[in-house]
Image (cartoon, rainbow, N blue to C red; front, side, top):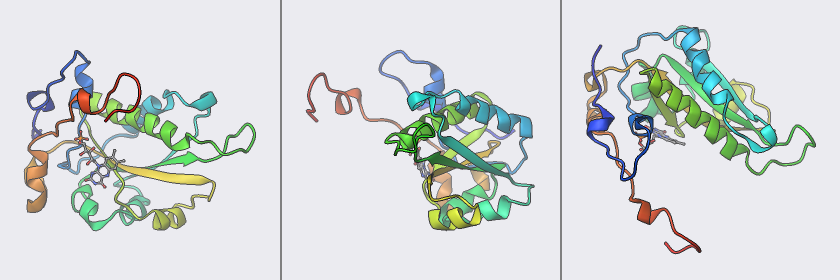
Length: 199
Ligand SMILES: Cc1cc2nc3c(=O)[nH]c(=O)nc-3n(C[C@H](O)[C@H](O)[C@H](O)COP(=O)(O)O)c2cc1C
């Protein structure tokens, strides 16, 4: 199997954490090989165990494997810049969140947040399975709503590409450099303050 760069060679944590957080990254190079239904279900299983307000579990996931009849519908929702590399994905996932509490029908102010927690679980699980996972905001939400029959009380949050890793050669030339170096992060001093807002 072709090798992507090892994020652990490019990323260092300033404080002790599990390697998994550094190993998760968002490459674009995928081989086009399929992944099994079982592997996909492991990703959703990880998402399922995320915390949520009142244990609402308001996340919903739609998916299309590349060999399924739904692939074109999902793929056509992506902006061209994402289609360019997602053509080699094994599956595309649309992450949704229900906007109202099921218990009382009132607006849930943290539906997007909870869906984000579940989605991160999914991305981390994919990392443990040596799969590429890459979240995307670059898609047409209106198109997705109609094409996938998503009701108005459900928000369309992100799409995620899942696939088997490949090396950057499979990517269009403009994209190859992006996969060479996993990104870094701001120092904690820029994102954490003791006490009031002081950035
Ligand atoms: C909500 C969200 C939307 C994103 N949208 C896109 C996208 O449309 N296209 C893309 O190539 N990457 C997209 N990304 C990937 C980010 O660019 C990437 O996560 C960020 O640069 C940090 O790099 P890392 O994930 O490799 O650590 C998105 C990530 C998130 C979380």
